[in-house]
Length: 455
Length: 168
Ligand code: SF4
Image 1 (cartoon, helix red, strand yellow):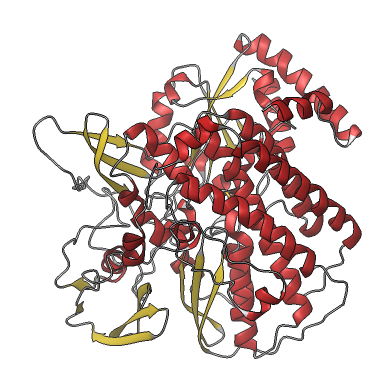
Image 2 (spheres, chains in turn green, orange):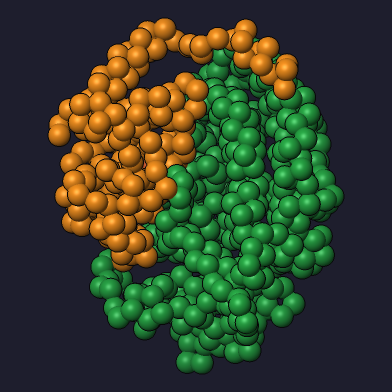
């Protein structure tokens, strides 16, 4: 079974802890008097971040965990506060005394530590990486995040699904359409309506366009981090064109507000012409880049994620597909009928992740052609029914999961697991054979979201 | 590689919508002359994300693409606040990032300015105040200029930079 998420709910007198696997959902209720539970991390290592977050959020004790450090609550956060408890209603908290965080380090003769971040050298999101170094070689690295923690889960409580929408679409800007797609699924389920095929096609088109934009960004930045700037100039032009297309179709360069229950009217012919050009430009890019030995010299064997490690950690998305694991939420009839082909590589290195992106762009173009249609649709939404609703989709990074509980018409509990939340935990496994100068390249090849991870 | 250079030579300078190009060219000229006058030809910006959704960063990255190519005008995004004249701040100033954003600002040598970008730092984006948010940014910094939008598009950022340059 693949582990997907572990999170808790405050039920008043008790907590409910929910474990989501690919094959089943397990639940246990524990009393607030003695809120403790056993760790899953011994079997599923990536459960540890979920559990540390649960301790911060609710004060739930993970009895036999090997790592009980805080996760979300950083040095100056008042540690007695557990903000996801229903009776915590503060809108303002003060900085408390600075308590240093104990990093995971390897120590020994001549071994030293390198701290990077939270503010990095480029235009990137904040996060911290802590390295134990033997000369240039990386012995260990700890990823430490949650600098962008905005408390979105708490922010959404008490809102209707429609009030929550503008916030949900801004959880992670480069995955906005994916988040909106899950909001759509959950809203449709809660209202008890079927999503018409035409609407699903429109939304799937936008999701693929978002994927193309994200992959194009990386197809430029990965070679750039490998010292080949010309690729960035080329790919960033294509990326800009795609963003402008997104704006033309949705009024937003990031597709904010694009997934709704209203009909959109598109100029299908001009989109077809655009896709044709994009196809040509990508084919040219592929011929060109495949032919540059210095890039492949840099990419090959760098940042290898072993397939066994990936399975153990439940890695998802591009990272998993690059080590040969066919894990894709688009593997279903709807996508297969519209030209989806599952893409994978086996080497698990930077090369593999780069090639997966390149092939996925090509496959997305095929699907986008098939998703184009001119039939109209209309959806009548009924009242929202209380209940627990879950949905999955494949964002440009990987499998995205969202669960929303509705009570009395408003959100009682919101939970989202960005693919990054799992994949960040696999990053340190990619470093073992490389030198620290390779780190930016390896990190970029995964291109995970900090905002979606931190919530 | 030969094929690339052939294509490059054939393509020449990239233009798109002519009207927009002309406007952009005007703005760019104005920026260049302001940067020359006020910053001896090079304006160094340190971008600090204090808790954004990452769309604002993506738009700043877009400023380097061949359509905008901001570096041609003498504007650089630098790696360290110690090399910067301006802090460009995005995001809602999270509880966890606020101390670091303040520290980054302290590290910028005088004279220095703060420009906020996107609706987040003013709490005008859809995010609502929670205990984990310390925005608005002007509670923490003296903000010289604000570039609005959610996110502001590259051309709005460029316009905003010109407005800033004219202000000081
Ligand atoms: S202003 Fe809007 S686009 Fe920019 S970071 Fe905030 S939510 Fe994202």
